[in-house]
Length: 425
Image (cartoon, rainbow, N blue to C red; front, side, top):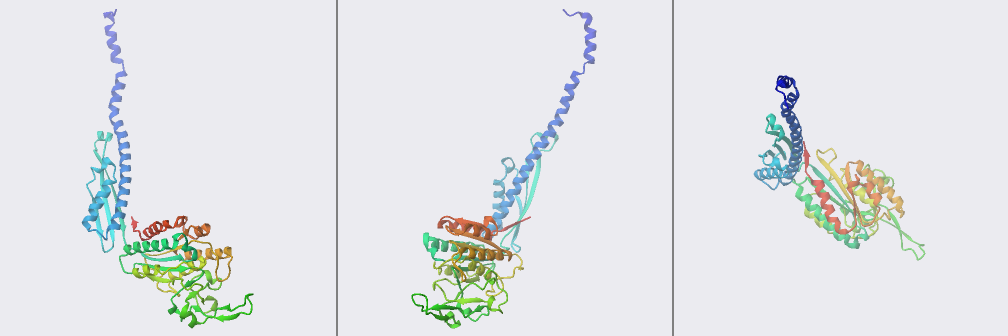
């Protein structure tokens, strides 16, 4: 039983007790502590929202640039707003009111400035109810000039597995994409270089200084290969019914252009091993002519990848044999080559030793890349994968096609990559 005599002592002890103060102090400190934690959480959310906004307007800028030629300014702005909003976090979508879009059709640029507000959660106990985030992006379209050489295997093996049929369709698909990407008449140009062991050029070039005549061959031999007659190829015979060119003398066989004063530097005119080999089509933006030229390709003969690469390079350089290309110093000019083959090297002017021809191909590919040409390589079912992979500018620019039906999607992908707009900051 409590004694009343002890009550004053109990009151004194209660007055001196500090435990209640700790609880009160904790209660007072809890509000700012929650605010600090809330600020950290909300700023993390704002950072994530800013990253999402950055990605959304970058994508919107590219999308808008691709469609700029087809849409009005109002339609572009509406698409940009919808695209950005669809790619924002759910709690930020409702706070996004629209982007500021500046379209300059003369400079062909689209600039997007966007702002969104992230609603705060716990940190609102300190006052702010939302945190603003913003981002800016700019895209350009149609600014690059493009020169593209299609270096295409026209050997006999391309007749198998519907490879030539697929190649023709894929080439036309690529040409269509490039045509649609071109805003100006000469913005994008394409050359076509069919090859087997030789290449064939327009016989109207017969008087050019870079062509050398006088190649010889044995004819009318007996069954043992003896008692032959030597035939010399003349300009008139070549111009009348041939038009084919063999490898230049080594080491000019893996280089482009240069002086043609010496015989060794000139391109040797030769008899066409197969009269149906399609001619080289120099750089042009005549789309109907390019499509028609694709139709002239016929699979015939053996494989010499080196001569294809060198003549593709020749169509992209400013010096003879062809002069349609612009100099590499041309502003915003990009040069590309797509080199496609379906077989191993089997024959050139000098040898039938595949390894020796491979070495020449490697040197030619190195020269192409050193000239500033971005080189894609495509192996169709057969061929030296290692050689072609090493020839490509980058490993991801090499394609190993297992079925001819894959050619068209690959050509479309390459065409889209080449003609794609650039994203600038």
